[in-house]
Image (cartoon, rainbow, N blue to C red; front, side, top):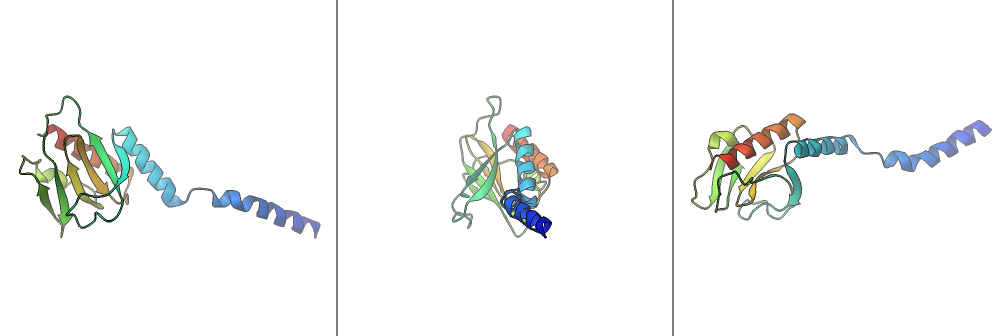
Amino acid sequence: MSYLWIVLIVFVALSPLVSALPSRRQRKVAALREAAALNGLYVQFRRPPPRTGMEDRLSTFYGCRRLRTDPPFDAEIFYRLTDGKWERWGSAAPIPALNMLSTLPPGVDVVWIDQVGAGVFWDECGEAGDVVSIAEVLRGILTSH
């Protein structure tokens, strides 16, 4: 009987430690964000731009900063995925090829391009390979202007 009490006390003592362990989803998101950092992206929580219909919620933004060697871009535009088709909003500045946007992974619903760089709003439901494709598209957008 005393062994049963010892086991019970050990379980009670360890239960807070077990509840502090990251969940499967938390480990997956951490791996995605690590892949982002390794591919030159940064991750922020921010509101999507106005007129996207999603500006009332914080979303995960994967961004890529413009390098000094990238062509300058003085406008601010964004694309929104609507019914499987990318729609452009913002200035009438030259835009990157839409075929680049079609290679983005599922869950990306807004692409933002401005003077600082480019980025996407993504729901983080994917794999590390999806982060690599996001990085490639963003680099392509920044070098295509």
